[in-house]
Length: 143
Image (cartoon, rainbow, N blue to C red):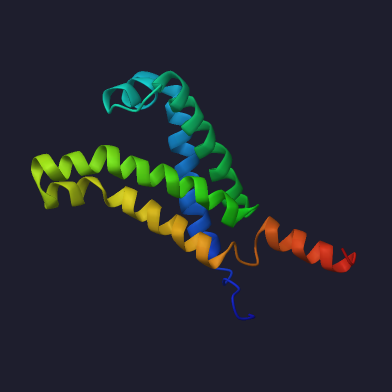
């Protein structure tokens, strides 16, 4: 493995991060009152009728890219933004109302997703990815 390349085991992180984002994005459409527009309205996100489907689409599209290892680093950036907004709008209020331990318990998945996306941004997709396949293909064709 060359310096700066992620090991093949990064596939496990890609599978976890990508699958959870895809699932969460789909649920915004499947359960709009609880997890989509209704939820966005409840937590005070502006323009919830626009933002919930937008965020759901970003989670699905970028999550699929992460799972496949396609444009992985680029796909991690909007997912990081989603997690920062999610933590600031849902976990900070818990911190202020109920204290650190309550917030820490509720935020465990959020922090795992945030750190997983940060890891993918830093490490890249690894050798078992469409990014690696495309890079190798370009190399063969001298592009």
